[in-house]
Image (cartoon, rainbow, N blue to C red):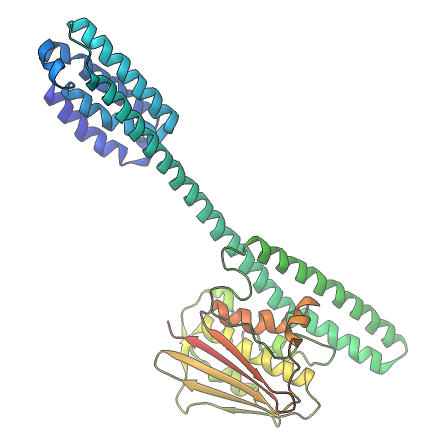
Amino acid sequence: MLAVMVVWTVFTTRAYARPHLRDWRLLTADLAVAFACLFATALAATPFYLTQAPPLSGYWFAGTALAASVIWGGRAAAAVAVLYGVADLTLRTVMDAAVTAATARGVVLLLLAGLAVGYMSWMSERAERRFAQAVALEARTREREQLARSIHDSVLQVLSLVSRRGAEAGGEAAELGRMAGEQEARLRALVAIGLSEGASAGADGGSGTNGAGGAAPPSTGRAASGRKGSGRAAAGAGGSGRAASSGSEAAVDLCEPLRRAESVRVSVSAPATPVILPAHTADELAAAVLAALDNVERHCPEGTRAWVLVEDEDDAVTVSVRDEGPGIEPGRLERARAEGRIGVAQSVLGRVRDLGGTVEYVSVPGQGTEVEMRVPRR
């Protein structure tokens, strides 16, 4: 009997370790062997032995009971414990052995252990399911945010430009501008609704705009979008010449797309040596910088100057965008986002947050605004 128990223990240890074998068939066979070894005690032990201690196969039976609790749950473990008690009583009756407190203790211990392990197994599976749901929800939320950035940096910018130019031209163009403005408002509302649903559903997962990515909510700053603009961010997305979604890990120079944005009103100061970053990181950081410059052009008086400073550090890259505009009144960004304007929230903060970086806005009314974006090297 001991040889059978040893061989079966080795077999079940390996079998239970393989998920495709861990089903009711293996457990049924395990229970059958365990009960067979329990009843085989009648051939290997004396009635006096059973009055002194539980049968040896009774201790071995605990492994099968715990396996039942993991596969079938706590109720199955309770049923197995009761069946063990019935089998032990039957064995003692057949062997004409006295029934002692050891029988009751064995049943109680099996019952408690089975219920505890079954509960822990259920909780573990539940936690795993919730974690998988949270990961899927975060992925969907990030997809919404990326889509919102793309729409803001392209479609909304163009509609805003058409609306403004149409109003300036008058006549039939004014009607076209009015229609573009209406479509812009509707599209902004749809984007805002999608983002708010994703943020509310994933609040526990840290997938909102001010989530675990580290992008601090600014107390002051520029509104996300407006009627004035030339679509600089739309042209600048993926400015390094590679699609951000391509997944390429090629190293590129961050300064290339930033230098292309240099003009009479925009000055770019960068190190003499290339600032090398992974292609996706460089694309997203450059797009965030260009979105900040676009905000300067659209929300500051015409001719307002802006300066871009690139700092290449050992463990991070910091890009600062400073303008000499009128600054921003406190709470302007919060109101802009409530109105469905997500330029800063997604095109700047969202992008840098997804890169694991931080964004800091410093704005003093009448003294301009400075945006500092810091992205760690990976």
